[in-house]
Image 1 (cartoon, one colour):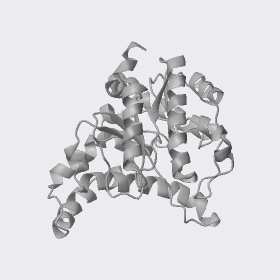
Image 2 (cartoon, one colour):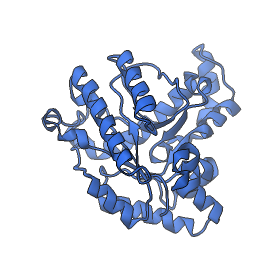
Image 3 (tube, helix red, strand yellow):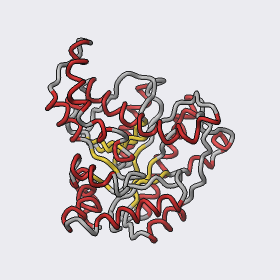
Image 4 (cartoon, one colour):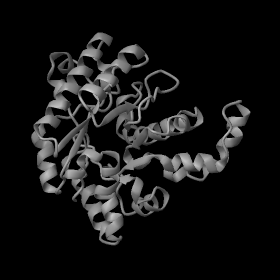
Length: 308
């Protein structure tokens, strides 16, 4: 793999005592992460640049004031990593919970983009607010958030299921609320091959127009909905199987597919398997399509990496 961008989780802030005393509200165990884990994976798969992000549970595991503080600390650490080796590291900004303080959220976004020069912003799929404020022409990485009401016996299966369905719900909400159409300069990367979006790519455009009309929402035609679905970018973290890749190539096209990893949440063995699957699949596509997945689409989203 010779991709200029990969996605991993930066867990520096979890060294804080406040985070040592907390856990994912869904009951999922937080994995250990340090920079050497990412460097070793990069070396094994010839990955040139990693863009780090902090995914779920985000700041939900702490008080609002702690959440604001830890978001800033994570973003400062991300900037530190990027500045230490800008060709190999980047970061998506972490934000406080906008359902608690939109002012604090927008302030952190402005600081991260204008001062820290973040490569984009990482959004969770839900915060308890009905819509998202997309006011900047930036790249947004979207990470699924698992509901906290799961029993222990439900965790293994639902951890897999909820991630994909949360991604799908988020994307369709962005379309039906007209948020995506009114903010075309914001480029949104959906993780895990877009959840179930590719598999409902006919159902959504055919069913949603009638539902939008029934609920007196902004009218959209089937062709408009399909166009908006295809405007998303899709990382292939845990989504590069020999069954899904041909369909993703047809649905999204190589210009909207990006190599991604989900380290450290999956084991190293799992991520090795999916990365090798992608490499093997690319032996059967054109050099142009392979380049687009490994480098080209990423360079369009993150032009600062064109010198890598």
